Length: 381
Image 1 (cartoon, rainbow, N blue to C red):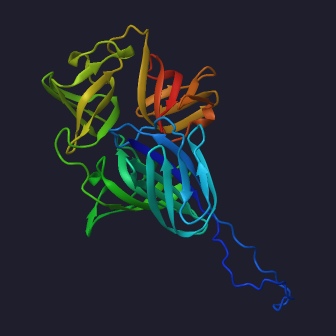
Image 2 (image 1 turned 30 degrees about the horizontal axis):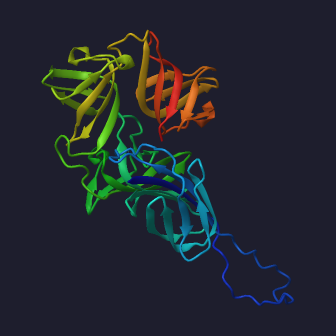
């Protein structure tokens, strides 16, 4: 069994430790009052089940119950509720160990150097009875550190951005890229590459001052890299059904006779439905500088749905006023109305739940200008 546990460590001030007299005494420093004993940290999060073969952008699964999260060596613990959530209060700072137990899980994971006023977000992947920290984000006093694997590289924009641990990381001309002792550039990033980012928080995103590339990313060749999804308009289409390629923004997509095609409303589609300018959703494996497509959803093919389409992508911009918002999802403009449904894990939410950087699936009606009027928006983070 493979489980994904998303934790949030909201650091407060360090707990006071001894040193004072047990009985009150008259002040000897001109009447000044000692500062109050600082409080501990609060750890909260959600426990979810992930697919056995997780993609780089880990999909949220069903919430688990019967699991307890605790801090080793203390009485601090919390059962996971029916929605998969838990909260741990007054956690001491410094080096601590977290234990996840129940439902066949018994994993102990270290969390070192918890600092005062620091917030730490973790994604812990548990396989069987053991676990590892897959992503980690620390922030405090406006500074942030984030470590994990690159989940998505959207088409080239200004500033250049990528997706890491469910957040958008923006870079600029002052961002330093380093791999070992070698200077690198944004173009050297690959989906699946493990990186450590230092920067500044800006809402839900991070503006990177430095990016340390931990490894070389996925192995070259089709089928060896992580599973990725790319959506947008086709450009530079060439080849035949047995071997073809095109671009979506700056991403190169390759396919062939093994590639499956699906049209709108999951109707039939084929290679002949691919055209420059057509909107597609591609699922495949990251190769060496390209995505090898295993499945292509052609939105304008296999209709029968009266213009009904479905698109998936990262929410990169929000404009307008509720309920008539103007969203940019991948490369598609999406419009909301008072009847638009917003869902996450089966729960109905308001339009306020939409945030930049989220992975969304949008179902709605295609308009003549290429935009979509959304009937339903599913938050997949």
